[in-house]
Each structure stands twice: as structure tokens, then as C-alpha cells.
Length: 149
Image (cartoon, one colour):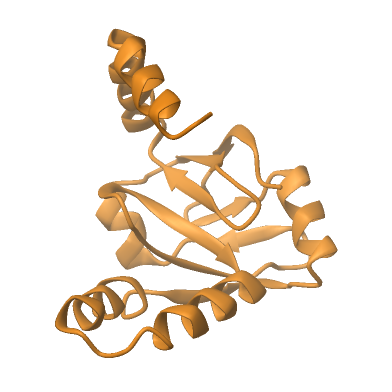
């Protein structure tokens, strides 16, 4: 699974070393590339899926039909997706247009969220998001409890 927070350097070319645990998960999946795209829940971070997960998700969404909302979703999510190879050193290149979207300069945070994907954040923005959660943990717990967890 992809779990944990890892703050990494971003070089002048936009490359960053993937966390060792994330590289191990890619190896388990026999994937050498990832897809970086818009996050489903906001513009303040990016979503990253291994190739196998991205392909499966693409097939699942494609099978749902051509409702306008699905077409809009496909344009937003798949239309902005960029496939990136993991190089021999274990680095990924965050494409320039996606770096600019997050205003990334010399640091990036990898945040594992489940077995299928992880996220890329500007460290300060993630800290602010975590602070918001910490300001009202009861509301979050209530929502999670309502889901049966």
C-alpha cells in the first residue's frame, strides 16, 4: 500500500526521488511508470497512480457510459494525466505544467493514501490542510463513524 508522508527535494529539472516504500509497491505491481493528474477532490494537490491502477480505473470509468458529467470528469482527470517513467535512480519527473499548478519549487511531499494511489503536495499547503483537520477532529470522526468505521 501507499502510506505515510515523505518530504523530498525537487531538483531544478523537476525530478524527485520516490520514497523507498512507494518504489517497493511499484515493484510488487510490476509497474515502471506512474500517471500524474488532477486530484479528484481539489486543485491543491496532484494524484499519482501506478500504470496498472490507472489503466484499471480508466477501464472502469469508460464502462460507465457517456453522461455529460462523466465526460466532464474524463476531460478533467484523464485529459490532464501524464505518464512518467520511474528512472533507474528511482526518481520521477513532475511535469512543468503540474509543478506550476502546485507552485512547487525545491520541495515536494509524497502522501500515501491507499493501495492504489498517492498524492503530491506542496509541503506548506499540506501542513495547512492538516491544521484544518486538527482544528475540528470531532467533525471528521463523526463523518467517518457514519460510514461504519
